[in-house]
Length: 269
Length: 269
Image (cartoon, rainbow over all chains, first blue to last red; front, side, top):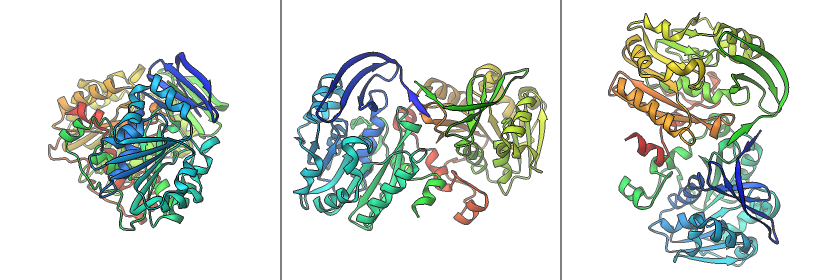
């Protein structure tokens, strides 16, 4: 099964040291960033992914002051993380500087996050970057591409062990983790990998029509075995949500994201 | 944007009085029923749609003894509705007898519902059928194709007024109601139509990868203004869910189905 998006125009086509970078103008989904042939995000629906991969872990933590984003070259996650009222500073480490430059030019609505005053960007291999970090972050979000090419190591146990070291006590991690419909084995494997390293673990998902199966999941792990994940630590009322310019996330959507279809929930027991 | 499914083999191709009927063997989604060129269901993911369009209204009603299904020729909804322990009898009215015959032959896993002892099938125009029914049903489920061709009248206010008449006091209706991503206007319009006729109304959704955007919504209406929809009237524990052969629906999934992304929730206020 595959999803096709109608392309009106290719806006940018290039090859960085790490991957092929393509920005297209689609017919109905706005502009889209495509890496190595896989749609990363479209302007039409990116807010669902970016809000959820950011606010699910941030609102599972009681006080997420210092945050690290691994990957996330388009800037959308930095944009969302910076919004959270308790977040004071954000480090972002992206291996591919060219992706960020291309997004600044063609997808400024997302790339805006990269120049937010709370954010410091490092162009480095995320794996190497966190190797030297010990007990620094409250929340680490891995906003990688799919587990092919440069992102492969970001789904392995060694990586999650480094994340554990880089966290403060009670710290929380969140990684994109595929769709339970067509990538059930990958979803289950990533869940087990995080479970081997963290005392509390959960899987959540959101809808994104331009991703395979129209959904994408997240695996969350916490150093605090008491973390519930499901119940938000900070709830926003309608006025606050509007002020934060939320389009997808609400406290109710947060809770609902952890309610899994029986066939996939059963595999996590 | 469109979704493509790889076809291994055409199993049946025919034209009834009402529509083109096609059954295909897909590469990864099992067999699929296609009406007028639109995928109605695949064996791989049909349970999500069938369980949710059935159990969301049934478990919003305190005592759903007598149920009517309008449409639902493949039999999947009848299969699910019959499972509910409080349901005593099910009438099903399907306009196209040929769809049912084709499904009995090629999709017996769904069509099984049509021959359940609780179920009586009428091959008739649903619109005409309900015109004569007054105060009979606790729950009416409209399992129609999309609002093109024969299904057009099933999304109009006159139809919902007839449903209202056909219900007992406190009765509940549920209709398939499109995706909030690419059919937002249709979703909003159907919601408003049901709201004009019923004192309580709600929209819920589930994930179905072979439908546009990977989701499908449902509009529910109740004659009882106190109906909460979101809180299930009957909760099943794990053992009961297994006995009912549930693959998607749980009480938590029921609640989560009503948690709407902010951008669509806002349009319903």
